[in-house]
Image (tube, rainbow, N blue to C red; front, side, top):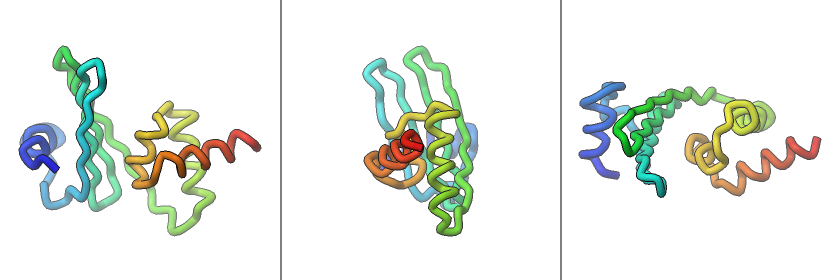
Length: 113
């Protein structure tokens, strides 16, 4: 985890997070030059910051509910992220701390209904 990137993009700038509350960070760069930072917080929130090649910053907040081991609710939430909110499977896997194949199987099971 690059602490300097976390400070620059999430602690010292909007959304001004406390570094102690960050439990995971991932940075990736798309072929078009867009940079995407994904932060997971200890309270279940996920914050995504996209920085486009021309410098525009887009910050998205997701709050993952506590499903209390209810797989049916969790799977419906995952399906809605994909089908309604148009998130990619690989991104949902990162938000949910699951593998992309697990997400794919959940989405497939809803499509068969």
